Length: 338
Image (cartoon, rainbow, N blue to C red; front, side, top):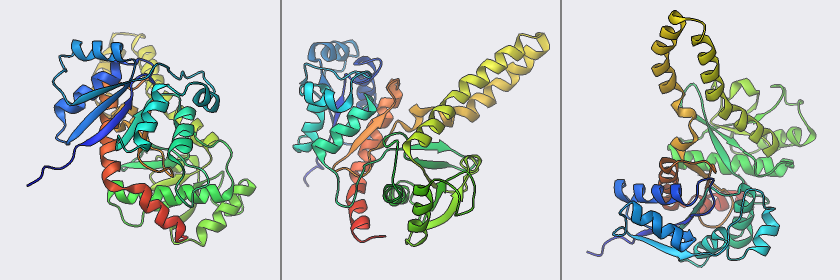
């Protein structure tokens, strides 16, 4: 019997804040600990990548290197960088995927550049005016998928509708949840509230076949009132960044409390472990990354400061999304006008 084909995952090895060390370490961890039948393609500065592989004694692993002479930084203008740095690790890796030499691509680099590269090189699927990225927000029960998380700062009602469709399909495939609840983020529950785009999006979603439950407010996200919450990227990214600051804020407040005396210090010591365990779901490395929804192929994007464990989890997410063929389902749904 013929063995199943290895899934080839291309990694932008130069995109992150600690590149290429963490990217290489995450790839090695995935290859050594995962049961997935995968091959890793590390794209970037070959001498630097090879040096890290040697330090990890990983030369025997199914890991290839494709050299790229340029790097797109966080400060680079996304579209300009793609035009000026055609041999960047991001552009080269994305082209490998577009040419069928890789089955998925992951990056923790410049978010705008990754989104632009995916849109320009891979292309949008039919029915999508703007691709989107989401964020998993831990809630009282499970998670809430927030769309858009920063890819599209200003959105029309049609785009908000498309985000809802894409998010609904993603949650169905990822969490195996039928008919997930979709809501619009707003300043009130009344359908007349919000900007003109949000009011019009409410009408589109109400007329759709989605399980649209109406408007929710910011406080409802953590209460898990909806599985998918839709908003524009300006609002979504602001919520995401605020949420990411909470663990550090709580740590600071606990430190201040502990400094007031021995009893306080003992109390903090007793509370620290359960608190740390409870807040572990807020660690972005746990989920690894999220797919860019609405483009052809599989592109996973993560935080620039991702740890090796975060990179490994991104690889596993890429494997999962590649097997689900989510973007094909999104195309079918939008063409059929859910």
